[in-house]
Image (tube, rainbow, N blue to C red; front, side, top):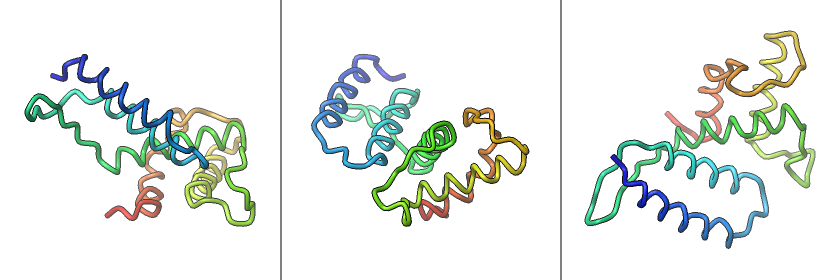
Length: 133
């Protein structure tokens, strides 16, 4: 079981990094948020010389980042690039998933990711986005 004091220490260090880096695009903040959530959600860790090792899988980060973009794009339609002709790949994939959702439900009403039941469709998109096996 993870010592809550260690989690707080990790979060304080991580927040220092987040506050002092340049967020000149949205994916950096999405990755930072995903890593923070995963670290807090972890119940298993490995103790190594007074430190804890928390394993964070790229697949877990991808799931969270895709959910953030899905909700942000579906609800707000925010522009994610200074070049509207060439949006970031994550935005293109997110828009494709939204189109699948809207076609499947015959609705343009925004919903939260977990209510959309899009997780199974997202697996192939995550593989394409992050070049996962």
